[in-house]
Length: 515
Ligand code: GLN
Image (tube, rainbow, N blue to C red; front, side, top):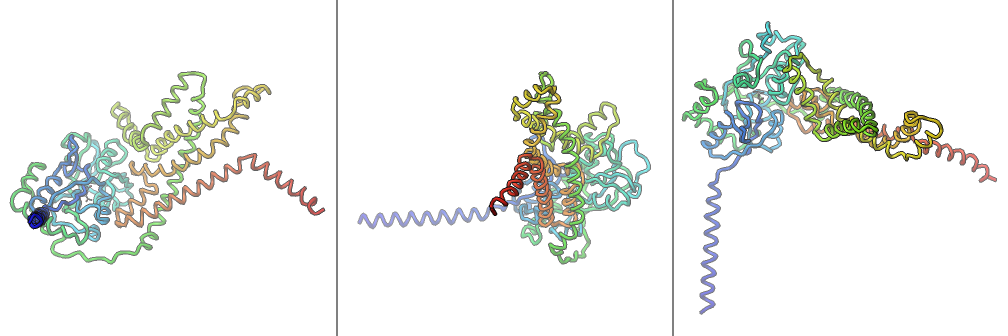
């Protein structure tokens, strides 16, 4: 009897559990899918960060509204503009809002939603500039652009123009403001917004819009979410939400938008190029970049060695203020990121000097060398100090008792021995420096990594290109470490004399062995 009741209770408990699971899974299946949306938050007024760290802008409001109407949630992920298409291809993001112009080339790599914004490129120059109204007027001039954008493409088509690419449009505009370039080619609403908000003074837009472009929301090719996004967009375009968002950010009525950026004609699918041809095509440019990387590292280590030796010796000075100054230098350059130092030297200093009324501009190569040399000097100084201190005091005492003064003792006795001990850590520093040269991409200097990024911005083949770039760096570092090992061997008198004695003893031993 009791057994029967227990069985019944157990059965109803099981039944309850099954019902609960069924209901909860039904509720879950009604849950909206959440799309990871890539965003480049340095392109106001389309996408940027509020002071509390939240994403904001026209695109941000738009995709939230599209999600609401299309039945999906949105989770933002911050990605630089030239990384957005690779991220979509790799599937790390489901969609992106990045004021991205729908172009034929991009349509081969990603699927675009229907157009959601009408924009165009504009030329910006400094206030006093005259005689520039169209692209042709920029022949032979220096133009700053954002990497991988339609502005970069337009600028590179100008004959003889020196195009400098930056990771963000704001950096390109800063470059113009600092007087390092003659013009910036960028999306007109973004340049206008920067001027209007007062964030960018002394800059004006000249001439007519150069292009008519339509922004679209890119998704991976064959994405199942394309329909949801297009459905949501159509709804908000029709129900007035789009106009409200447009009014909020541009204080105007939105223009009419077409249903497709290329009219009704479908873009022809091109057959993708094989990996080997992608690599072979890119190799000459990458090797040129590798030469520049080597040049940067060699020149910087040369100045770094001079500066570092002086600072290292200053660290051992008998005068306390000299020691403190050397210590402060080392602490600063070792304790702050090299990337920040590069930005400070290239963008910060000229801006500071100009605000003080001095007309100062920095050449990219010079700025890169100054930053890399100053940074490596700090590390080399510590190597030099350690090397000198590792030589027993007895050595310089003996040298001085032989009649050498302290400078002569340092030069002829201590330094030659210390230098041998410094070689392995110096080799390490050189290899680190060689890799760190890649950080100067931030100021748009076209070394190895930048050349790779520029090719990716054209062909959207990040895997092959980054793999080759990595291999070229590896080849450079392996070669350098071989070079340093050779130097170590060549400079080691113990090795040299022991190999000589070995030879001598072999010569004298062999006849004895025969005897
Ligand atoms: N609309 C431009 C392009 O698609 C620039 C976009 C951007 O920098 N976020 O190339």
